[in-house]
Length: 241
Image 1 (cartoon, rainbow, N blue to C red):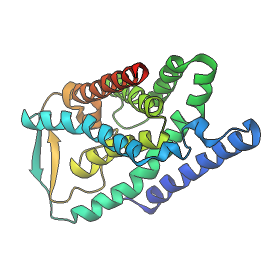
Image 2: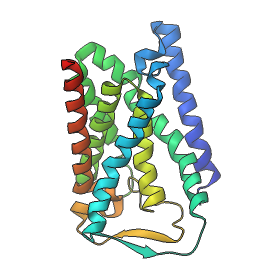
Image 3: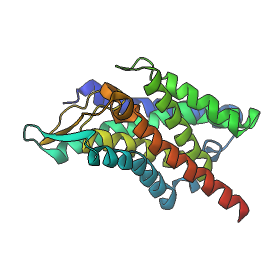
Image 4: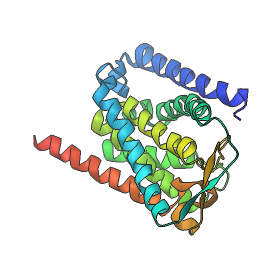
């Protein structure tokens, strides 16, 4: 199970990043929370729902394709409390996702976009996001490349929806689906418990992600790419309206 230290840290980190954002925004720059996509409008239920849907579909569709082609297989595991494990995963993963979004796509994304444009901001923060995972177990060029692509996906959600909350929920939904539904490693980190069943990879690592988990394979890259295509289409459609 998750240790106390693992549970406490994800709660402390976003509070620290929020405090840093407050100091820089309100005391130094004299800007509103909307500058970093954390204003009231960014918390609209429709935007939050889109974050959950986009994050879930980006990983659920590739996983379903891999399961259907038997590149992933479900095997039995010792009986346990699925709901309790899923809830504990949420307690850990939600604040962790918010902390990573604040760090990788909060003030820094807004600042670079203001100075150099959204394209440079999106590229710079996405590459940085990938490098944040370089010390994770099993990291290699392919898994980190997919994480960089995930950075583009999450950054596009911020820019298109105008909501860091939406990107946080997309990030959370992606991780939670892998950990709580598939019972597979998240970015190389094994889940703490697989009650009743677990999903194992039987296909090639380049497709399934291997020990990194499904988000390190080309199947996940496909899901992220489809999400990106939709987001850019949605942005162009809004601009034409």
